[in-house]
Amino acid sequence: SAVISQKPSRDICQRGTSLTIQCQVDSQVTMMFWYRQQPGQSLTLIATANQGSEATYESGFVIDKFPISRPNLTFSTLTVSNMSPEDSSIYLCSVVGPGGDYGYTFGSGTRLTVV
Amino acid sequence: AQKITQTQPGMFVQEKEAVTLDCTYDTSDPSYGLFWYKQPSSGEMIFLIYQGSYDQQNATEGRYSLNFQKARKSANLVISASQLGDSAMYFCAMRGRSNQFYFGTGTSLTVIP
Image 1: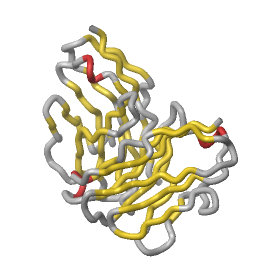
Image 2: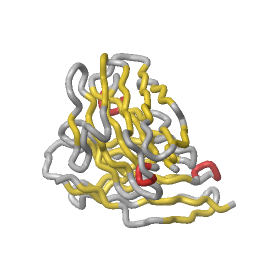
Image 3: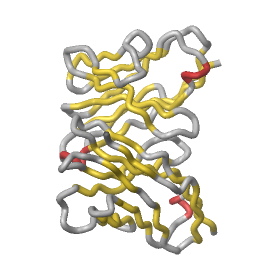
Image 4: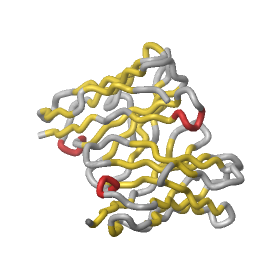
């Protein structure tokens, strides 16, 4: 399966600021996703990162709040904009890599605290 | 619509004993994949086991096995010979048509020495 490097692993940010999370994969992957996990909750899909085009957002998530880039098949970023304490969560990227269904891999996550 | 249900918010098991974590699912897709992930306190999601909807045999990966009952739409995870390091959150998930995942609410497993 693909190996993902996700940065930063954690951060504490002031409300009103923005944080960009990076996801680097060691091989070209067809699909990349961004998830949010609020404290004590399950994972919720934010969007599918599309290479060379705008991301596809799930209901309840908008581009102005969570802009996503995917310039190539190995890299994507998620920005959490104009943060509030409610944005405090773990953010994870996920990819479908070699191996088909056995190739689903998650990054190590970014633990974000907004104060 | 896709839905994953985990009805056990917390489970306890004695070290070296086996434990079953429940998962039921709902989907109208004829083809789907079912996954189990382990999430330790560090936050990373660790892939444990996968079951395809057309697989005839239950999946096994070391101490992990998946009890797949298609007619009942259940995909329970069985961990044999529990170890202290197995203490974590466990999530059942289903792959959707566009390859995104739908997750259950998770089960917190505590292994008691």
